[in-house]
Length: 606
Image (cartoon, rainbow, N blue to C red; front, side, top):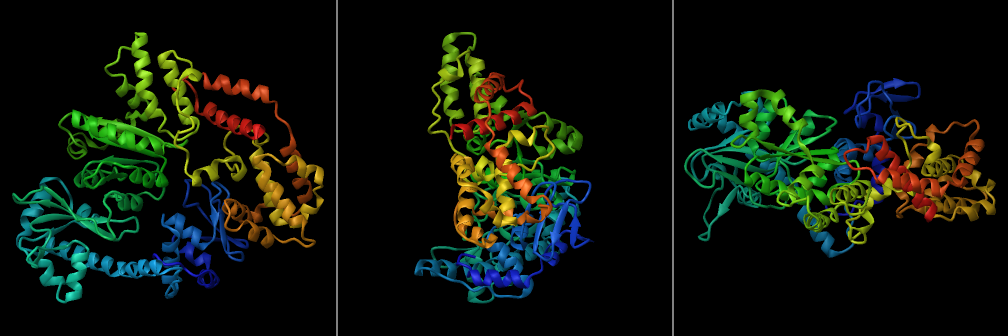
């Protein structure tokens, strides 16, 4: 959907839809008092902490903090964007979505977008045709024999909707291209080709067909494996308005179907690797479509799970491919993400290896895959004598450009410290370019910045008293619940809330104090369209967690905690001690502590 969706339609949609029906159709809800509960679909848990409030039409998870309305739930649950979530809900009610356009360009964009649905429908018909040919066509015996020879079962072939493009030049045209408009759709999707003489013919002939599905499960393209002597051995659909091979991953939709909560994805090199692994129970693998892994692929993967494992052949070609994957991965390595590299024995691929030695053996290899930092440093110092000063100097010069591609954060700091440890050069002496380091995208910064993030992880042992952002957001949440609290804050306190972390709280108090009868809507309206909008909405969604009794005491206690001064020298010493540790020796708890200390120090300096 490329046009602008009118806000009035969105409001009407939310009025007509019932969030309980929306969620219950995907996650089974159980009535519990005034609310409905379930196990959270966004994190693993044994006891239900996911609550749906029918009266207020929003959901909240006490375990992981996920919250929002029906639109937000669809976006998170189906991993889709805002327009697609609107489209999904509108389809449920049988509503047609009106469009607004701000310019002729937007109007033209939308008109072209309206044709996408027929293209998806066309490819769905093509996929069904190919599947039927695998069952019915006389020439399909060779395809079936090949699939059996590769050890594929009928069930796995059905799961991945494998088909067969028969020999001949006009199978699709004869069966699905009876009208001029139908032939045009086949042309637009790349299923048929028109030569210079104006004649059309099928792109895929005498090939096993692998449908390529987008994240919503719609067929957007095909890959074909030749059975005869035609070249190339593997052929993909061309780029179209609905298929961009540089951003799609084969098997991603199937991996999401098999794993409600993905923890990792294994990136392999071919369709049959993905299918064979899934058949043997490793149902979290994907493959690129004839391209190297790029940043678009990585960002898509990291939106779904925190870890990616690259699987390569152990030969030089595999090593070269791994280095390209490493270069694409570095800019995406925000804190909390992990990338590892697995090299198989020479001459083996995931398909042959899992058939020969089984799932447990391959998963043991996956578990022992090299972390990014180890692969990076091992690769760069392979031909360097680290026993000499010249070698260490050369190594630092080679490694620094790679480290400068990492996003600013704790992981980058630890990598620089590790480089300092390996070279014997002090970290402060390394001429790394902090100003030009890749910064986290705005979406991540808003989540991780102390001024716009509320700590909800109660599992770690650090006290909330060491996290001022918790109390800042707690105070804002209390204001949203009872806006009149703003009138109890005097000017002397406001003057102390000048640092960057607390500025949103200070401005919110000022806005509410200007009105004799302030409301939550007033605050939400003020922050609409700003960087703080998502934070305010999130905190407003958590209103139901605030107890009525003692609310004033909680508010003033939160303000008092915010105003407490930290001993900056003590914090600086602890930061220095943690940073001096090597990457291999620092514990996970120490990493978490370092993140908190750096945030605290930044707050005091600002």
